[in-house]
Length: 105
Image (cartoon, rainbow, N blue to C red; front, side, top):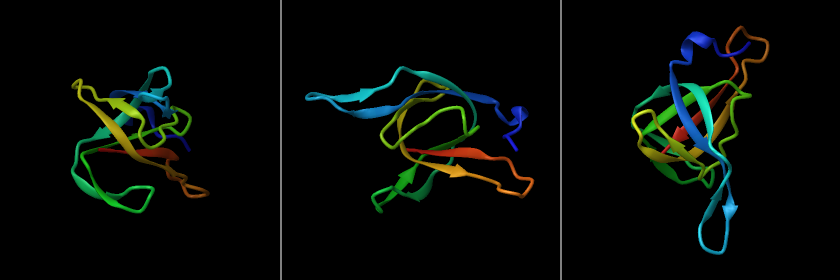
């Protein structure tokens, strides 16, 4: 089951992190992603195990984007932030919407 379209009330722009050049980070071309954006401060776990503070989280359909840690995200108000972690949420056989949860710094 997909995340219902009515929940996709916001739009963010994601530039997926691709690694580092000799000088700076390298990002993929920007992708516009319809999503539900939740501006909420909370403590989350970074993929390396550290606890870090997340200032926002967005939820989108599984096929909308890939946003590995360190990807750059532009929020609707123009602020730019980075991805802490992306979490695949699969409802399995339950009638719950499959979606991607992307935690932002």
